[in-house]
Image (tube, rainbow, N blue to C red):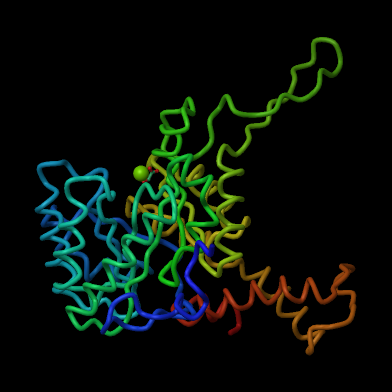
Amino acid sequence: MASTRTPRKFFAPLAIGAPAPMRERPARLERMIHFIPPHVEKLRSRAGEIARQVDVVLGNLEDAIPADAKEAARRGFIEMAAAHDYGATGLWTRINCLNSPWALDDILEIVPAVGSKLDVIMLPKVEGPWDIHYLDQLLAQLEAKAGIGRPIMIHAILETPEGVNNIEDIAAASPRMHGMSLGPADLAASRGMKTTRVGGGHPAYGVLADPGAEGAPRAFFQQDLWHYTVGRMVDACAAYGLDAFYGPFGDFSDPEACEAQFRNAFLQGCAGAWSLHPSQIAIAKRVFSPDPDEVAFAKKILDAMPDGTGAVLIEGKMQDDATWKQAKVIVDRARLVAAKDPELAARYGL
Ligand code: GLV
Ligand code: MG
């Protein structure tokens, strides 16, 4: 017995009158997903100004919002969504998790009020495709009822061991899937990892070099605690045409470590990361925009192999059909950045 919908039904609306599911996700630049706590009037009122500096503005309703401010945060998000024109900047919300007392009202109140401006709902603590199916069906019903013309996408946070185990089924669950973010804090807790940090490395997690000469100190190389999970997430997302994101980096006093963590994620294939503090916006912008020297070299490869086949030598380095594809990843990304950022467009020569 088939356990998934047939291919034809997979792309049919889940409610009469709901918009048709998207076959392709819109290509958007999402280097940083900037978190705003919408119950704080001062921060909420600046959302329009912040939207001009970031790629995605997210109103956070889940963790970090006190229980007694949940309803104020929901109301604040609706107000902030309605009050500003977000233009090409993405507007997202992170709702509370599905087993919480707030999730249903988050969805029931936000979608009819501002659903046509909302690009993505970030769903925390996703454990399997059933969580996506539930939200998928409910969103279709609400979109139909409110007359919303384009589907709201779903972004899952990967932050439980069960979610990691079911990662491919989550990625495959719906054409609404936008992508996934690593949630290192909840994931560390639920896995029983022995760290109190929000993302980043740990001084004790590393590899000790072999003993050398008698008495010589042995080098210790710190390793990336998140390498395995980011790798799994990138493969699952890429296989299903979704984007992977590194999530939060909690130590605002260590911008260098934040940059290193973001850069590992970028090199491994991630499209962006969360910015929880204004100082992390510039870090994400720097890291998730390709390096102009790398773009220049990638352009040389594309120019040297106009039809993408064959083999050439550039600066002593072998190029062939595969490196042409690597170069195309970099140049496509640079074009996406250049379309939004005139300064980088000039540096890329695009
Ligand atoms: C994010 O939600 C995390 O738990 O790290
Ligand atoms: Mg979390």
